[in-house]
Length: 91
Image 1 (cartoon, one colour):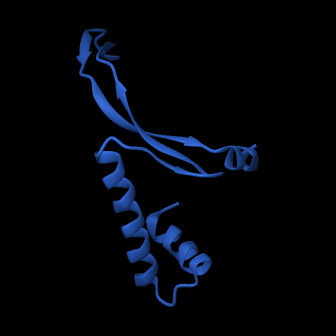
Image 2 (cartoon, rainbow, N blue to C red):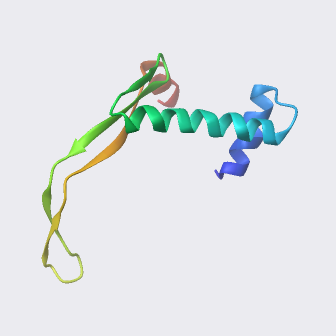
């Protein structure tokens, strides 16, 4: 699904009069989540899930075409863990 397709659904579900209103609301929501994650904090939506930042340790990888070992640096990544209600709906 593309962002454009999602905004159309979001507009209908959110009762927005214009697509631009839905797009602005979605942008504000995403930017708010980004701000929380940048601060190394987590955000939970009961029943939906939890967004959090986790550290990936440095490791040695392998170049698949040459077989040569490559150092992969440690980094922070965003992680989403679905809540029980969402998990049950998916399964």
